[in-house]
Amino acid sequence: MRDEKCLPRALLSTGLLLAAGLALQGCGGGGGGGGGFLPIPAPAPAPAPPAPPPAGPSVEQLKSSCNALKGQVIEGVTVTGTVRFEAKAPLYPAGFCQVLGTRAPFLDIEIDVPDNWTGRYWQQGGGGFDGRIASVVTTDPGGAVTAVSPVLALKGAVYAASNGGNRANVPAQAAPGVWIGGTDDARQSAADYAYAAGGTTLRFGKAVAKAFFGKTPSHSYFNGCSNGGRNAYIAAQRWPDEFDGIVAGCETMDMGGAVTGLMNTAAKAATPAEISPAQYAAAYAAAVTACDAGDGATDGYLANPGACALPAASLQCGQPGANADPALCLSAAQVPTLAGLLGNLTLAGGATAYSKYNWTNFAPVSAIPGVPALGVTSYGGLGGGFAFLATNDPLWFGAPPPGTAPAPNLASFDLNRDYYVFSSGLQRAGADHDRSAIAAYVASGRKLLSWHDAGDPLLSANDHMRNFATMSSTARELGLADPRSNARLFIVPASSHGAGGNLNEVDWLAAIIDWVEGGKAPEQLTYNFRVGATARTMPVCESPRYPRYNGSGDVNSAASFTCTP
Image 1 (tube, helix red, strand yellow):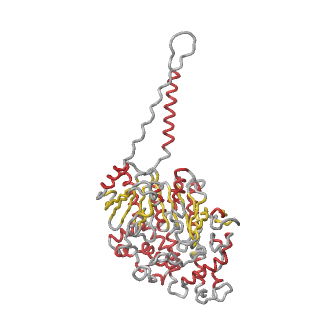
Image 2: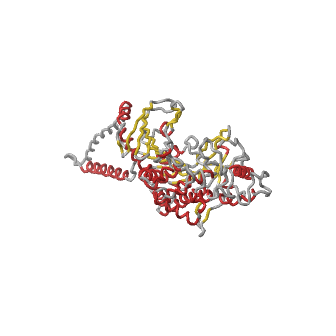
Image 3: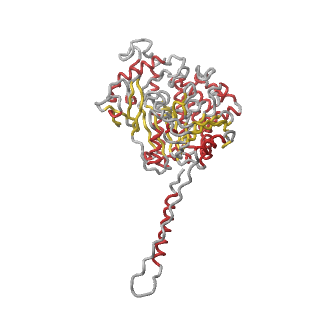
């Protein structure tokens, strides 16, 4: 990482030496003779041009390094294997070495080192309870490479990712159940998930890069969404000197509050207050009908769901706006559940524990068979895992496997007690955030690009906005006159969790690199997505602006929208 503070001293030293040389020339005596001018000294010989930097290692040397790493222990991680990928245009222009490592008990890491390394290091966060590595390569069932992350293919960065300290494909080693055992392995796996896997991956990844090229990265980045967004904020607060730029998406910067919100709703499972997925879908359809034109385009898509003020009470059975189907309208017991999601969750003293959600389908259908949808049906499982990290109490889990039935402790959930239990416990576990430390990262001059989906049904966009504002205020108190110079929050116009996290959907990669290396702060990005078979693009605006249709032009094109306050 470059230290810009060193540059002025170097320039000053050069200037002093040059001035001294000129002074000595001016003081030199001339020869004897009359009153003519002193002879002008001959100019000093031009300095020799600097020697060209030594060429980097050859491809053959890189291949040799790839093979030589097998079996080595680097930063406490044992290299279990290496794989050489030769260049395959147009997927990736240069070959690379994939280095696989493991550290006890269950932490697995992948580092990918391109032949055409640009000096960049990119660390990728996880998602959910992790358990799998977000690999740089995508393969077909036969093992052939079908895609390579643009991080490596386009930007020539060393890529690093881990499984977060557990193995989803090995039931006895999969989180969150693996944490329950009380063994040393269970405790280390929990610590790895909370924070430690990020540090081990960081040290291993940079050491592997140095093993190939003899030097450390010149620019380092972290990127993640959901639990990866939590990982990203953890990186800012724990290893601020190691990352020049961080992209943190779809997490709230306050897991204690988020877990409280999740469990507050999960506590209504198996009670008359629980809302069915079909009812949530019908409620969202009513919101789209009522608010569709609010973004200027009547297209069946809410680009600004935060502006939709349809009250939950209007959907109660018997109300004029309610669904005529008695299975889809809301009962009197269910209305407060939906109203609670659409309103701030406040403590007895009036403080906000968790900010409201925007209108969305809170129970979306999972796109992957066997994988829970990222909405209310995941609240108990996700919240229960973090509640266990905070309390070490397995009764926050449901019946085995965790999250498949209401957890026993949910029957006695108490907002004004458990908010403090979760918040303090997650801080002790190292799984939550220190917003003052994140503010110090921002105030130091490094760059933070945060983002969230407007209609995220899992983690509240408004809670992210609230905590980002608090962090920015702290950065200002630390002496940063304009926090926007180093930190910005963008809102993706999507109503799901994690939409836009793929770098082909929103180019966070170019945005953070241009900001760090070129000084070009992001003003507006583009979201590429599909609605059914229709390809669409829409602006990604800096909060609190939203994309509004201009009134003419292709409604499927971002060019037809303007970011509007």
